[in-house]
Length: 296
Length: 238
Image (cartoon, rainbow over all chains, first blue to last red; front, side, top):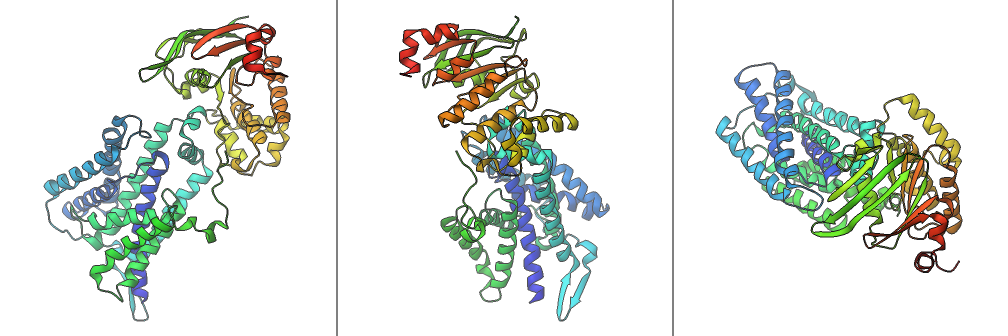
């Protein structure tokens, strides 16, 4: 049971990181980054290339993944989003982002091949035995690291000048401009942060999914599910949604065939969208009946 | 006195529909100028163009002698042009203090920001009491004071206000107008846009009347306030 729990939480941590990165971009641009799963894949494949093929140190692989992801995210921002003009008034980004994700997946297939490549666990796969359960240090580290990233991001949002500006752009983009905030710069920084989170998420999930061009096709969708369950753009929500989804999936497979696992996540997502469109945290018991603070 | 702002033959179009048909006006340093007009006259559009939010189709906007019609809102804020937008636009989930800090976003010096914040709190004691409260929880009048204080955080040269009386109780409107009148002689130049023009005309030096994208009248506030057409259309029976 403990083993299942640890695995569920570590998968949940990955979902949470995806939901967090999707939320970072959504909060400032109101855009759902349909390309995010592919970015994670690119990061993981880059890291695999450095570590598995060229036998460079682990940290070099992570660093390369971060750099490559950042560059690709900037390219995506300029080609798929900014080039379309005013993003608040058109939705063509759905097509361009989806298209970019197809392009990235296929380029990755051409460059890296279609193999499922093993990827090393952190700490060489060392584990700790508690009772009759064996928990990988990698899983524990994944959970801790995801929480650290989440808390750090939350602190940046609440305590720094960049965070204040980010929230300002996300609430009232026009008024933010009147404050002298360059929303373009803030959005680019969000894309950069999302790229970094994607790279880290990719490296952490790769040992479980194996590194391949299609490693994030299913798991990527779960990221969106987690983001929607937790409430889009809400940092705490991303973690609630991510961990909830990871845990439910792992516990449910103890009772139903594993093949139905993915169906459960999406049914859950659909139920949340129908009954709590603002995400789980928008439920009355969490807001104590207070609604949005907005007052016109 | 030198002209701080001079707008010449400014035209503005949304797509192909021209909504401002070549207006010209000027503001001298230290003046309070009111721009009167009904709904849809083009008042807010004019202010958006002056603050860099929207691009004009033709004409020029000279500020301190330089054309600013192609500059971004950020660079205009740095040059001392601040707009208090219609409906106040307080950041609802930022605290009062954070709203003020956002107002000082372009200011690099932490000391200057602290001094400025202190002086705002002295001027608006209510804001000091509520410094940790979310902007969205303030009353309309408090939000308007916060919106003005937020714009003053960078010590602007030209302060523009888009319908500051909108949705406020008459007694609060008085307060806002007294505040604006108190800026006189401090070196701050004010461009005030209003639909209900009584009090605005009382505190301003000169006024312009904008009607469906054309400037139809200008003069000292007393002249404009005394014009029968203005009395009928904008001042009502007082």
